[in-house]
Length: 473
Image (cartoon, rainbow, N blue to C red):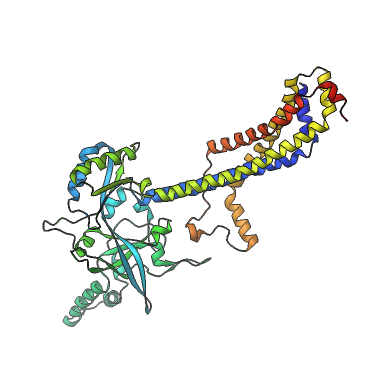
């Protein structure tokens, strides 16, 4: 019982130990906050990357792709029919987007992606990322709404003639037909969904300004198929925006109808089959996508050797995901040094206590205290310091994570500038994810360091001879 009483007494009376407790508290709290924020960012990023890409992607080695897409998909279905939920053929090519803004032209390098929107929506979160200029979700479709056509000059005149009413003579009938033709020419019948960052301009503290609102006529330029690549072009009408929250995609992706892109790129063979260079595959829940990708790769190798590349969405985004994991590991190592500094503080404080309490240790031993009993006093004291520090740090860290967005708003108000700029990450709130196993590992690590730091002073006190300790001055 004397061991516990002395540990508790030292904790209450030795205020110098408060420095070690604060160090452990700050270290544990900081590690919990940083790990939760990093895990939240990584989780959000993985969700959005996975939403843009399907589970498994089959790609061709050539930009022109392959015209036997149906045969390839049929072979994949025969191989793993029960494992596949949906598939979507895709044609992807680099290009240039151009549209007029007032008297000037805006030009952007883009990635043009031809898809069947209904099929593509079944293989991922494509439909979840489609919005109009009001922020409302729109269905996955390239159809140009009649409401947009009515916004053209010819459409406005047609609307005026309809509201005027009355009898329409032969001249007016010709005029109506002419205006309808002009309406089609002024607004291309094929729609396109462009990246949100391409069609908007972000203004801090103000709503985003739409450079290319729905109904805008855009031109796309891309390489045509042939022995000597030539520049091809086509015009489309903006019908919506693709907003995934990843600037890499929102500033480059332009989605157009697959059949239209195949025709303008001259990728339709004499049999009427259009070429594709990707097949997006969504698998059933619980299926090991790595094993499935390997199996599909072996099957397609026999169909056309060294032509198809099969990868999972994680393999496609491997460098980015690996960079985030490495950054998180390095931060953990650096932050863990704070707790290590607290451990050295415990070592120094305990060494001072041993010297200061040498005579008291001699008295305890003379009264019958065992060597292990003396050792356990200091080990228990170290464990108690670690438990208090890590416990307070855990509670403080979790509370900080819980109210991190409120704290960010307060700091932004005090510092007069935005601490967390949502224009960089497209997150309206700081994402956090508390992983219980990580919290437990941090707390146990802090306890371990506190106990290890007290071993040497405890061993030194335990080996003291009672007579020499009593004679110590």
